[in-house]
Image (cartoon, rainbow, N blue to C red; front, side, top):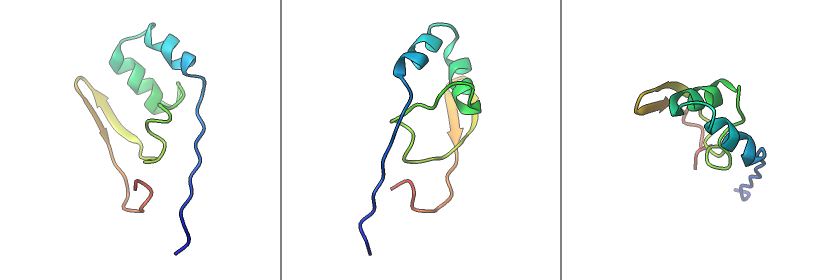
Length: 70
């Protein structure tokens, strides 16, 4: 099996830092989940799983068994 390789890129973190000062945490996470704000990278890119819901104290997500999260 050939070796696996991944590369990552991410947006300027100042975009998220500024947005975080303008809204509460739930709204912040919801807007990331809907794509209104850039994703939390490099924290979240390897998994590539979408958020199913964001509510007080909980963020739910799912991932198909494809080997992309390892």
